[in-house]
Length: 167
Image 1 (cartoon, rainbow, N blue to C red):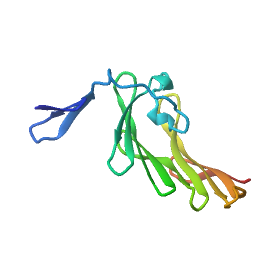
Image 2: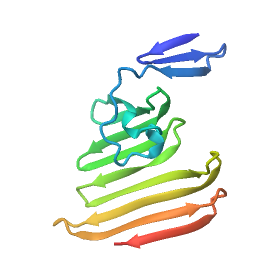
Image 3: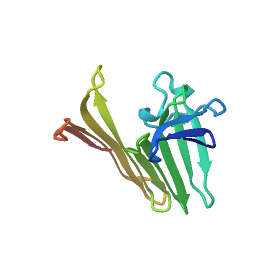
C-alpha cells in the first residue's frame, strides 16, 4: 500500500512496515546559507543546491528537513529558543546525532559540538572526529574564557589524538 502525507509518499509492506519513502522536492527552496551546517546535511555535489523544508511550531521552534537536489533525504535540524537561550541540534537521515550549538545570552555562554565520521576513498570508516567550542562573556561583553577542541578516534573509539586550545 502507499500513502502520501504532504510531499512524502510512503510504501508499506503487508505488516505496515515502511519499505520505501520518496519526497517530491521540486517545489522546495534551496538553502540560503550552509554556514555551520554539518556537511552530511548538504548536497554532496553542490551545497547550494540543498533543498529545505521548514516546519515552524506553535510557541516557537522549528524543524528543517534537508534534501539533496535529487530528492534524497539527508537529515534534520531542530531549533528552539526561550528567553535568551537558543539551541540547534542536527541529525542525519537515520536520526543519528551529528552535533549542535547553543547560545545563552542571559548568562553569557555559547558553544558547539559536532561529530563526523572519517571515511577513505572507498567509503570505509577510518575513524571519528569530535570538534567543538565553548565561550563565556561577562555582562560587559568581555571574554571570560574561550576554548576549542578536537578529539580524533580510531574506529574502535580509542583516542588517537586531541587538541585543546584555550584562547
